[in-house]
Image 1 (spheres, helix red, strand yellow):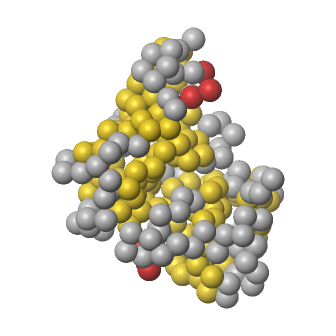
Image 2 (cartoon, each protein chain N blue to C red):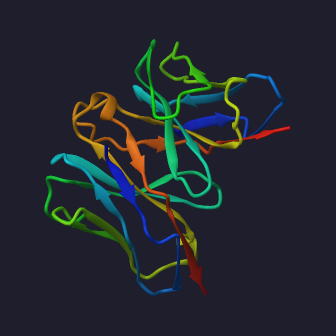
Length: 117
Length: 115
Protein backbone atom coordinates (compact mmCIF):
# COMPACT_ATOMS: atom_id res chain seq x y z
CA UNK A 1 0.00 0.00 0.00
CA UNK A 2 1.09 3.50 -0.75
CA UNK A 3 1.96 5.90 2.05
CA UNK A 4 2.74 9.60 2.20
CA UNK A 5 4.89 11.10 4.93
CA UNK A 6 5.25 14.73 5.90
CA UNK A 7 7.88 14.89 8.62
CA UNK A 8 7.46 18.57 9.50
CA UNK A 9 4.31 19.12 11.60
CA UNK A 10 4.96 22.87 11.73
CA UNK A 11 7.12 25.36 9.84
CA UNK A 12 7.60 29.10 10.08
CA UNK A 13 8.86 31.61 7.53
CA UNK A 14 9.37 35.36 7.43
CA UNK A 15 7.33 37.32 4.97
CA UNK A 16 9.11 37.63 1.58
CA UNK A 17 11.44 34.73 2.40
CA UNK A 18 11.50 31.23 0.88
CA UNK A 19 10.41 28.05 2.61
CA UNK A 20 10.50 24.39 1.59
CA UNK A 21 8.03 21.80 2.83
CA UNK A 22 9.08 18.16 2.68
CA UNK A 23 7.13 15.14 1.49
CA UNK A 24 8.21 11.57 0.90
CA UNK A 25 6.11 8.70 -0.33
CA UNK A 26 6.33 4.98 -0.70
CA UNK A 27 5.02 3.11 -3.73
CA UNK A 28 5.92 0.23 -5.99
CA UNK A 29 4.15 1.84 -8.93
CA UNK A 30 5.92 3.68 -11.71
CA UNK A 31 3.03 5.82 -12.90
CA UNK A 32 1.25 8.15 -10.51
CA UNK A 33 0.44 11.75 -9.70
CA UNK A 34 1.50 13.93 -6.80
CA UNK A 35 -0.31 16.96 -5.45
CA UNK A 36 0.11 19.71 -2.89
CA UNK A 37 -3.09 21.04 -1.36
CA UNK A 38 -3.43 24.10 0.87
CA UNK A 39 -6.00 24.30 3.66
CA UNK A 40 -6.35 27.81 5.10
CA UNK A 41 -8.26 28.51 8.34
CA UNK A 42 -11.48 28.52 6.28
CA UNK A 43 -10.82 24.73 5.95
CA UNK A 44 -11.41 24.58 2.19
CA UNK A 45 -8.85 22.43 0.39
CA UNK A 46 -7.23 24.29 -2.48
CA UNK A 47 -5.02 22.65 -5.10
CA UNK A 48 -1.62 24.36 -5.18
CA UNK A 49 0.36 22.32 -7.67
CA UNK A 50 0.54 18.86 -9.20
CA UNK A 51 3.21 16.69 -10.79
CA UNK A 52 2.96 13.75 -13.15
CA UNK A 53 5.49 11.06 -12.29
CA UNK A 54 6.39 10.46 -15.94
CA UNK A 55 7.51 14.08 -16.32
CA UNK A 56 11.07 14.83 -15.30
CA UNK A 57 10.53 18.58 -15.34
CA UNK A 58 9.50 20.02 -12.00
CA UNK A 59 6.10 21.72 -11.94
CA UNK A 60 5.83 25.43 -11.16
CA UNK A 61 2.86 27.69 -10.47
CA UNK A 62 3.87 31.31 -9.93
CA UNK A 63 5.60 31.43 -6.51
CA UNK A 64 5.13 27.71 -5.92
CA UNK A 65 7.47 25.06 -7.31
CA UNK A 66 8.29 21.47 -6.54
CA UNK A 67 11.46 19.43 -6.37
CA UNK A 68 10.42 16.00 -7.61
CA UNK A 69 13.01 13.28 -7.07
CA UNK A 70 11.43 10.08 -8.36
CA UNK A 71 14.24 7.72 -7.40
CA UNK A 72 14.30 9.10 -3.88
CA UNK A 73 10.48 9.24 -3.75
CA UNK A 74 10.61 12.82 -2.61
CA UNK A 75 8.26 15.66 -3.53
CA UNK A 76 9.03 18.92 -1.73
CA UNK A 77 7.18 22.21 -2.16
CA UNK A 78 9.06 25.50 -2.35
CA UNK A 79 7.22 28.74 -1.67
CA UNK A 80 9.10 31.83 -2.79
CA UNK A 81 8.45 35.39 -1.63
CA UNK A 82 6.16 34.13 1.14
CA UNK A 83 3.03 36.16 1.80
CA UNK A 84 0.77 36.36 4.84
CA UNK A 85 -1.94 34.65 2.82
CA UNK A 86 0.27 31.58 2.44
CA UNK A 87 -0.27 30.71 6.10
CA UNK A 88 -2.17 27.44 6.08
CA UNK A 89 -1.95 23.69 6.51
CA UNK A 90 -0.28 22.08 3.50
CA UNK A 91 -1.01 18.50 2.51
CA UNK A 92 0.98 16.34 0.15
CA UNK A 93 -1.09 13.71 -1.70
CA UNK A 94 -0.48 10.71 -3.96
CA UNK A 95 -2.78 9.25 -6.58
CA UNK A 96 -2.19 6.09 -8.55
CA UNK A 97 -2.62 6.15 -12.32
CA UNK A 98 -3.89 2.57 -12.36
CA UNK A 99 -7.51 3.28 -11.57
CA UNK A 100 -10.18 1.18 -9.89
CA UNK A 101 -9.91 0.93 -6.13
CA UNK A 102 -6.54 2.63 -6.28
CA UNK A 103 -8.04 5.77 -7.77
CA UNK A 104 -8.02 7.74 -4.57
CA UNK A 105 -5.94 10.46 -3.02
CA UNK A 106 -3.65 9.33 -0.23
CA UNK A 107 -2.77 12.23 2.03
CA UNK A 108 0.08 12.97 4.36
CA UNK A 109 -0.60 14.31 7.84
CA UNK A 110 0.08 17.91 6.85
CA UNK A 111 2.49 20.73 7.65
CA UNK A 112 1.20 23.85 9.36
CA UNK A 113 2.94 26.87 7.87
CA UNK A 114 3.08 30.16 9.78
CA UNK A 115 4.16 33.33 8.02
CA UNK A 116 5.70 36.00 10.25
CA UNK A 117 5.31 39.67 9.24
CA UNK B 1 -19.64 30.09 -10.53
CA UNK B 2 -19.27 26.33 -10.44
CA UNK B 3 -18.38 24.67 -7.22
CA UNK B 4 -19.14 22.20 -4.47
CA UNK B 5 -21.62 23.07 -1.74
CA UNK B 6 -21.63 21.24 1.54
CA UNK B 7 -24.31 21.73 4.15
CA UNK B 8 -24.72 22.28 6.96
CA UNK B 9 -21.47 23.91 8.03
CA UNK B 10 -21.92 22.65 11.59
CA UNK B 11 -23.93 19.62 12.70
CA UNK B 12 -24.61 18.04 16.05
CA UNK B 13 -25.59 14.44 16.58
CA UNK B 14 -27.34 12.88 19.55
CA UNK B 15 -26.66 9.37 20.74
CA UNK B 16 -28.30 6.75 18.52
CA UNK B 17 -29.18 9.26 15.84
CA UNK B 18 -28.40 9.07 12.14
CA UNK B 19 -27.44 12.34 10.48
CA UNK B 20 -26.99 13.17 6.80
CA UNK B 21 -24.41 15.53 5.34
CA UNK B 22 -25.24 17.10 2.02
CA UNK B 23 -22.86 17.53 -0.92
CA UNK B 24 -23.93 19.12 -4.19
CA UNK B 25 -21.75 20.02 -7.17
CA UNK B 26 -22.49 21.93 -10.36
CA UNK B 27 -19.16 21.22 -12.04
CA UNK B 28 -20.59 18.37 -14.12
CA UNK B 29 -18.06 16.03 -12.52
CA UNK B 30 -18.64 12.29 -12.71
CA UNK B 31 -16.66 11.26 -9.64
CA UNK B 32 -17.42 12.30 -6.07
CA UNK B 33 -15.68 11.51 -2.79
CA UNK B 34 -16.16 11.79 0.97
CA UNK B 35 -13.20 12.27 3.31
CA UNK B 36 -12.93 12.45 7.05
CA UNK B 37 -10.32 14.75 8.62
CA UNK B 38 -9.09 14.25 12.17
CA UNK B 39 -6.32 16.27 13.81
CA UNK B 40 -2.90 14.88 13.03
CA UNK B 41 -4.21 12.23 10.62
CA UNK B 42 -4.71 14.06 7.35
CA UNK B 43 -7.69 13.05 5.23
CA UNK B 44 -9.02 9.53 4.98
CA UNK B 45 -11.39 8.28 2.27
CA UNK B 46 -14.82 7.10 3.44
CA UNK B 47 -16.68 6.40 0.17
CA UNK B 48 -16.35 7.34 -3.47
CA UNK B 49 -18.56 7.19 -6.53
CA UNK B 50 -17.38 7.20 -10.12
CA UNK B 51 -20.82 7.25 -11.76
CA UNK B 52 -24.48 7.59 -10.82
CA UNK B 53 -25.98 4.61 -8.95
CA UNK B 54 -22.54 3.22 -8.17
CA UNK B 55 -20.25 3.77 -5.19
CA UNK B 56 -17.37 2.03 -3.48
CA UNK B 57 -16.10 1.80 0.07
CA UNK B 58 -12.97 3.66 0.96
CA UNK B 59 -10.61 3.00 3.84
CA UNK B 60 -12.97 3.83 6.72
CA UNK B 61 -16.51 3.08 5.48
CA UNK B 62 -17.79 1.36 8.63
CA UNK B 63 -20.61 3.32 10.24
CA UNK B 64 -21.27 5.38 7.12
CA UNK B 65 -23.57 5.05 4.12
CA UNK B 66 -23.98 6.96 0.86
CA UNK B 67 -26.22 7.18 -2.17
CA UNK B 68 -25.68 8.53 -5.68
CA UNK B 69 -29.06 8.93 -7.33
CA UNK B 70 -28.10 12.07 -9.20
CA UNK B 71 -24.83 13.15 -10.77
CA UNK B 72 -24.86 16.39 -8.79
CA UNK B 73 -25.50 14.92 -5.35
CA UNK B 74 -23.60 12.55 -3.05
CA UNK B 75 -25.05 12.65 0.48
CA UNK B 76 -23.26 10.95 3.37
CA UNK B 77 -25.17 9.43 6.30
CA UNK B 78 -23.35 8.99 9.57
CA UNK B 79 -25.16 6.16 11.30
CA UNK B 80 -25.42 5.33 14.98
CA UNK B 81 -22.95 2.51 14.30
CA UNK B 82 -20.20 5.12 13.90
CA UNK B 83 -19.08 5.41 17.52
CA UNK B 84 -16.64 8.25 17.03
CA UNK B 85 -18.24 10.58 14.48
CA UNK B 86 -16.73 13.84 15.72
CA UNK B 87 -14.61 15.08 12.82
CA UNK B 88 -14.45 17.44 9.88
CA UNK B 89 -16.00 15.98 6.72
CA UNK B 90 -14.93 17.05 3.25
CA UNK B 91 -16.65 16.27 -0.01
CA UNK B 92 -14.75 16.37 -3.30
CA UNK B 93 -15.39 15.82 -6.98
CA UNK B 94 -13.37 15.37 -10.14
CA UNK B 95 -13.99 14.74 -13.83
CA UNK B 96 -13.79 11.15 -14.89
CA UNK B 97 -10.55 10.63 -16.76
CA UNK B 98 -9.13 7.25 -17.60
CA UNK B 99 -5.66 8.52 -16.79
CA UNK B 100 -6.84 9.77 -13.38
CA UNK B 101 -4.98 12.96 -14.07
CA UNK B 102 -7.75 15.27 -12.97
CA UNK B 103 -7.36 16.90 -9.55
CA UNK B 104 -10.12 16.77 -7.01
CA UNK B 105 -12.02 19.91 -6.09
CA UNK B 106 -13.21 20.24 -2.51
CA UNK B 107 -16.17 21.76 -0.71
CA UNK B 108 -15.91 23.89 2.43
CA UNK B 109 -16.61 20.99 4.76
CA UNK B 110 -19.01 20.08 7.58
CA UNK B 111 -17.95 19.88 11.20
CA UNK B 112 -19.85 17.15 13.03
CA UNK B 113 -19.91 16.96 16.82
CA UNK B 114 -21.62 14.73 19.36
CA UNK B 115 -24.06 16.34 21.79
